[in-house]
Length: 473
Image (cartoon, rainbow, N blue to C red; front, side, top):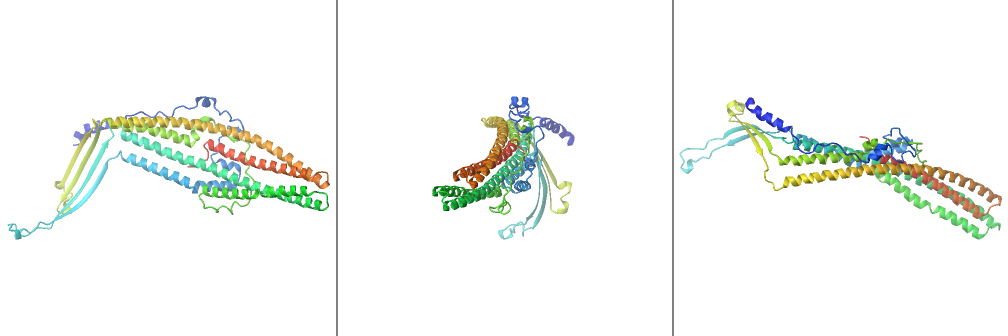
C-alpha cells in the first residue's frame, strides 16, 4: 500500500514546494539623501552621537516622574488595548499555521434497536426482537495539500500582522511615555507659576501697606493707592485659572496612569521644580532611527503582509488537491471493535479546480495588489514623516535651549532691577509707579523663564517621541 502511494506522495511534495505570488524583498529605500548624509540637518543643535536611552525619562533624574511613567505603562487602558490586539494577532497566526496541518476527528456511538411486534397485524414472524446493540467507533482525516503555496502565503501574512501588532504596542508605549512627561511638566509649570503669583501678591501687599501709610501721611495720593491696589488685585486674579489648570493636569495624569480623578491629588500636591535636562541629547543616525521608530516597523510589516496576500489570492487560480480518509469499526460487542474483520477504511484523493469563475479570482488578486501599493505608499509617507518629525523636534529643542538661556539672563536682570527699585522706593527716591513697573517686569520675566523651562522639557519629550524611544516589550 505504501509503495503504491509513494509516487502520489512524492508528486504532492514536489508541487507543495511551489509558491505563487511575489516574494517579499524588503522595504524600499526612502530618503536616500538623508541616509547618505548620515545625519539629520539639525542634529547638531544640542545632540550627540551616543546611543540613545530607551527609558529616556530616567535621564531627567526625577524619581516621582519615573514612578508615574512606569505606572502608566502598566495600567493604561491604551496599553491594555494594544496588548489585547497583539494576543489576537498571535492567535490568528497560530490558526493560520494550524490550517496547513491535517484535520482529524474521532467519533463513537451506540445504536440500540428493537423491531416491532407484528403478530397483531397478522404477521408470521411473531413477537418483536431486541433490543439489538451496535457499537461504532471511527476516525476521519482530511488534508489539503498546499500545492501552490496559498496556505504558506497566509501564514506569512499572519506572521507579518503579528509583528505589526507588536510594533503597535511599542508605538503606544512611546506615545504614552511622552504624554506622561508632558502632562507632568504642565503640572509642575502651573504649580511654579502659582507659587510665583503668591510671592508677587505678598510683595504687592507690602507695597499696598506702605502706600496706605504714605497716603495717611499725605506723601502719596489716592491715585497712587488705587494703582497699587489694582496691581495687587490683577495679580491675585491669576490664581483661580492656575488652580483650575492644576486640577486638569492632575486628572490628565490620572487618566494616563489608568487612575480615577483625584487619586493623584495628595501624591502630587507638593510643588517641585521641573526636572533638569541633560546638556546633550543622544541621537542616533537616520538609519538607526528608521529601525527604532515603532510606527515605521508597523508600516513595514503591513507592507510585508499585503505582499504575501497577493500570493494567497493568486493560489486560487490553480487546482486544489485534498486527501480524505476514514477508518471505522462496528460490532455488536464493544470487546470486538478492534477486530480486523469489523473494520472499514476509505481513502479519497480529490482534485478540484474552479475553471470558470468569471473573473472573481482576478478581481481579488488585483485588489490584493492595490492593497500592497497602498501599504507601500503608506510606508514611504511614514518614513518621510518620521524624518520630518525628528528634524523639526531637533530644531525646536536646539532653539528653545538658546531661548531659555536668554530668558534666564532677562530674569536675572529684572530681579536685580526690582530689588534696586524697591530700595529706592523705601528711601524715597523712587515713586510708587516706578516700583510697580519694576515688580511687573520682574514677575513677567520670571513667568517667562518658568514657561520657557517647561517648554524646553516638553520639547525634550517630543524629541524622544519623534525618535521612537520609550518602548519596552
